[in-house]
Image (cartoon, rainbow, N blue to C red; front, side, top):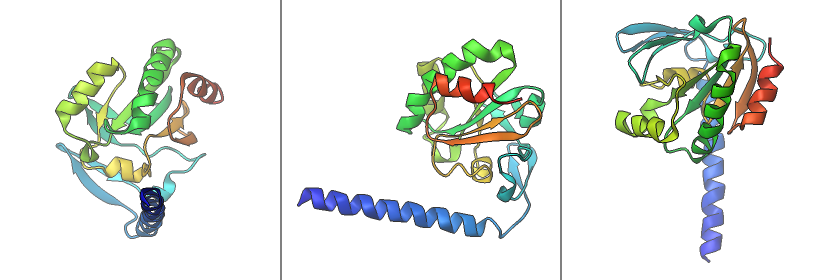
Length: 191
């Protein structure tokens, strides 16, 4: 009996996820552009339909966990792994040691990792700081306090990562965790 209830609960959850994703995709056309406030900065957000492989990655500016301004366009000329995550996410926890190892091995080769924390969905700054310390993360951790950048980049399932080439063009989107070898292979394919 308990197995049947669990099966039904899983099916209902799957249906709810599909419904939410369909609803989100229909509502993305409501406003093609809007301005939102993150900290004291205004950030122009484009229609999320622009988030496609082969197109330029829309710029954004967020404040990092260390209080620094992080602007995607400042990384033009480098390959970027743009990752969306949260501290409570088990696949994110599995992915982070691989990201840190990959970053340490490749940061001298013009590869950057921007691990955008979906702060509006997370457990507070203390939890994020503790997570970063526990995992020994040394790459930039921009904070998406309002969730606007995560929505714009369609990070409905996390982790979600975008690989952005040195020209600022999206070369790939990965939904789910990556390991060191996968990141190496995907970045080698980029310009």
